[in-house]
Image (spheres, rainbow, N blue to C red):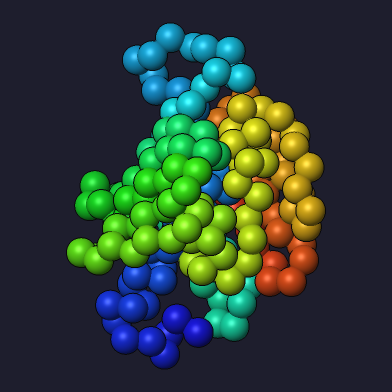
Length: 170
């Protein structure tokens, strides 16, 4: 689907997909900050990869910096060379995605995610997963067994299959 679009629209949709994927998983507290109890962590950094088994298959990878909560936060995605690919900010009443010099506004984070990948992602569950809680999300299976080593894997098993992998910086 993305392959047949204009290059700028395709890049924007890829950035949206990366943003949505980043919301699926997160990272650990910054190395310089003292370790907080998991329930209080609100800042994660690391790398993520997302593979969506649509036709054609879409695969994306980026570094990310996520701070906040499901109700208010910011996510910045960067390339391995440090170039900002996308910046997403959200609050309870809006979500904004800035990518490729364009800004798109949405009524909610969930709407942004839905538009970006054509499916709902369990944003609240993702934040719980980042905090080490195995929060159930319909259609999703999460593997937190390697969280101690900074790794999270989530798999969407309904509709369009997707695979998310996160490596947290510790």
